[in-house]
Length: 204
Image (cartoon, rainbow, N blue to C red; front, top):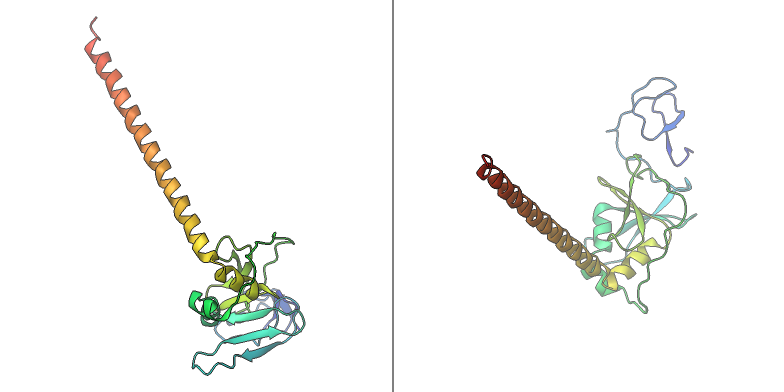
């Protein structure tokens, strides 16, 4: 079994970094369009088990869950459905105010379950404190308990608070730009004034 940050070379079958397109051992080129990888936990390397929600709707949610560490993989559409405000308000009951937990531990980039490329880390909603691992093309990896934290954050109005903070931040930035523009305009007028006086009194 390959380590979480490695994949098997398609030619010599040795472990290589998931970002390599050419094998350093045999020089073989890796075919990135050969299809998706078999689902394997990017944290501990254990096989993932696919769970499909028992919803009667056609757009059932599908998660790939690691029975060893409790993490889960959600494809892009499934993640969007699971974190849609309307869906969360209907299915999640909150009994306490959401509190952001301190971000601890070393920064660890893990590979995408589908393509094997290293994913970006992102603070969900910018202020939730839940750092998700995201592949822009395929989906999101959530460590154990993170989906519940995200839905709690959303149900408690976290996305609205995030938008309000962003609006306030942009408003302050616009005020600073306007203030700087006014200061520049004043300085230009002052320089023009002194230039005019210099010309006017040059012969005195």
